[in-house]
Amino acid sequence: MLASTAWAQSVAPGFPAPARTAHAVVPHAASCHNGASFDRFLAGLKQQALADGVSQRAIGEAAPYLVYDQGIVNRDRGQRVFGQVFTEFSGRMAAPYRMQQGQAHIRTYAAAFARAEKEYGVPPAVIAAFWGLESDFGANMGNLPTLRSLVSLAYDCRRSERFIGETIAALKIIDRGDLTPEEMIGSWAGELGQTQFLPTHYFTYAVDYGGHRNLLSNPEDVIGSTANYIASGLKWRRGEPWLQEVRVTAPNDFPWDQADLTIRLPRSKWARLGVKYSDGRPLPDDEMPASLLLPMGRNGPAFLAYANFAAYTEWNNSLIYSTTAGYLATRIAGAPPMQRPTAHVAQLPFSELRELQQLLVRAGYDVGKIDGVMGQQSRSAVKAMQIKYGLPADSWPTAELLARMRGPRAQPATAAAAQSVR
Image (cartoon, rainbow, N blue to C red):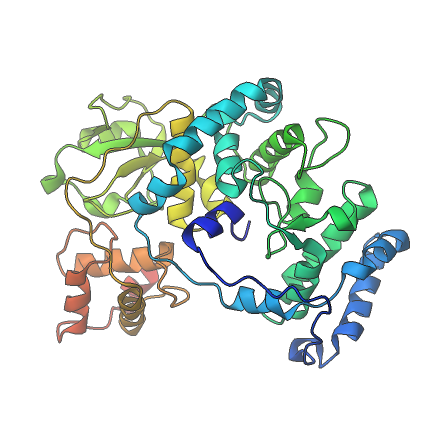
């Protein structure tokens, strides 16, 4: 999944829509294709599809839709990051109405949910949460020709190989008889269906729960296919939890550097450190491993993230999105609303997050792309610098840390320290 339609509409209102001209704009020859024109590139893509088993009939049916749209490429290049803290984002995306709709859909399609859970081991609430976040249960799937989006992104040089594969997968979907080219309407990024599958996922994981595989209009197929993808593609562990809200009862003495998705401790160990369920109940005294997840640092909400939480970060690597999806699933399953921070948790502006990343790189740490997004690499580097400066090492970027790194005390990290957070 590149970006859910419902999510994109929620956090990016008014984002300019891609061009929808009747005649596609002919692009300049792309350097990554040895200067080949789009028509020449497309001829090669069709030959590659034939070699990969797609029939000439399917390619012929799709041909009128395999046209270039510069507006799609512009939109892909112009994606923006919206700076929302977790409580703000989850408050919008995991709102009570979406929880209630999820519960209602579980009742309406009880047989399909029961079948999916029996076959794949994925709880109904987990499926329903993704369904609601990705498209508001089919209400917002996008309205753009999928083949046009895919082939335009395939010709663009940024992720060409990936979208060549997605275009061929879309042709295989047509060849299999799941959808016709004109039925392939979806998001600008080429995703299809009510849980926004890329064509490779659609072709691999779509199952038939009612006639033929149709993830655009058949809710039963949506339920079964989403369960199949979560179980088979994302390695869901049957019968295990995914996320539970907790609280730290002794924050002044807590080893905040242990709060990291890369660190797993038995629940018995977390209990001894003073972690309890949010309602004050003790954690089980067992060896089930879990990570302490602090999406807003030590002053924000806290969760135990289990092995199944990896399915969420694989679905979408945005920590805010994945935590929201896991939290919404717990709400649909009957968990109470999470506790809100007792005080305001400040988030650095986007420009300062990028500056912090630049300073971390200058200090010798690998943060991945300098984009203002606090992914796992950036959070690990932040934690290392917090340890260096004697600050609570909760991986949350603060104005105090930025000020320290701007000052004369900021020294390059040792090679060993830099390596430790990569």
